[in-house]
Image 1 (cartoon, rainbow, N blue to C red):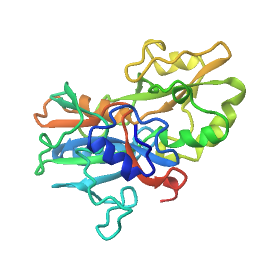
Image 2: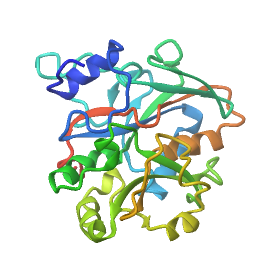
Image 3: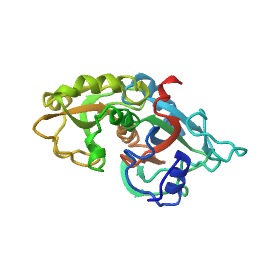
Image 4: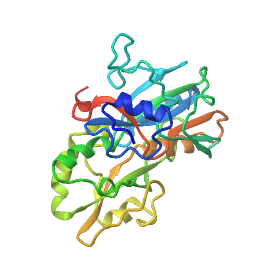
Length: 281
């Protein structure tokens, strides 16, 4: 892949379908975001869901109805036609490596561009904080996540832990991401990631007992992402995951005929804000 210097250049590669892989470890130093695009009939309940569940669903920004290229907070994607360093071609329909399309709670297909499916009179896009945003800080502390070491996607699991309900969003399960660490490093990992409150913060649980507490079906078979071997001197460490919002949307949209879109798990939107600054907003 061509060397990427800025988030805007990376988004251009996605727009041109020159990058279609997972984004963990790419454009280090910049925050990443989960993406969920909903019909307007679900939008208010979803915003309230995020407010009631800020750890798994940290809402960063949303698009305006009719404008998939405009966010209500321009600190995440800088757009300015007078500045060549900023991205005046940003478009949430094209600037991710991969998207998933759903309808009536059923998966339809995976694509690299949702322009022809996005209804300008109906769809609203949401950016949700992503744990990839704290991985660079772990790397700087010699705690590189194994998914980056192996150049693989992070492991993600559906749990039996439920979100606080909001409107049509009822009985929605938490999704967690998992990164193995040695027991002696857990407190340092917690200290580092605790500061990233808008990108899920510190782990919600860790250790093999946590598998049963969270209600994970099979640690060796994640529902999303790649399987990750846990060495004998390591334990699983679990963070709340933004894919939770995708699972919630599918739970709530059984009677909704409109398309719903999300990032393909692990294939995030690279933001213009530094990962160290996202919690200062």
